[in-house]
Image (cartoon, rainbow, N blue to C red; front, side, top):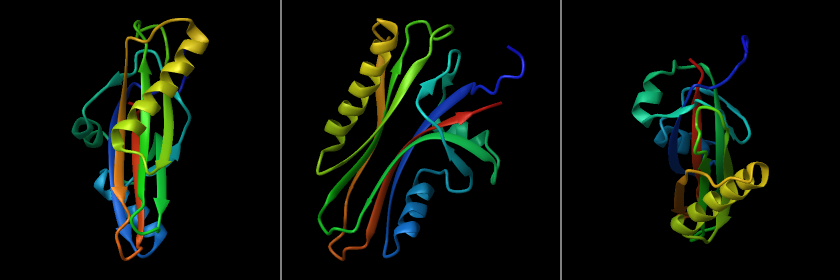
Amino acid sequence: MTGQFVPKKVFFTSGAGSHPDKLTSFEMALRQASIHCYNIVEVSSILPPKCRIIPKDEGVGMLFPGSITFAILSRLSSSEAGRRITASVGMAIPRDVDNDWGYFAEYQSFDESKETAGAYAEKIADNMYRSISDKVPEKTMNRTKSAVVNDDGDWSTVLAAAVFIME
């Protein structure tokens, strides 16, 4: 399997931002999540075999500003005053992490609690994993961010991400 482009590590992060400009609110969310200085490429939903979960601080320390960085990204924006917005990334982790792959699931919602949205993202990842493997995952987990749009009606953006380290 030489020449494969497979992530070796992954970390989770989340953030929220608010600003009169929609794009700038996204930038503020990226800053809070500590992933604002990377060129993020969104990818879909597979946790590769042998890919280890590491702490956010360790992962951020392994990246170089401006680098192309692959991530599972869930985000949602709104300017509706008083509206709750939530973004979540759920994950199903296989029992045999050295040989089996797991799943990520992105989920966004309006007016749901952080806990409800996180549980649903985990359920989606669990369902996807079971549908291809007929196995029960070792565990599920999520990273979720929720915010309420301020009364001024500025744009708010929430994001949750699983960021890959390629090594």
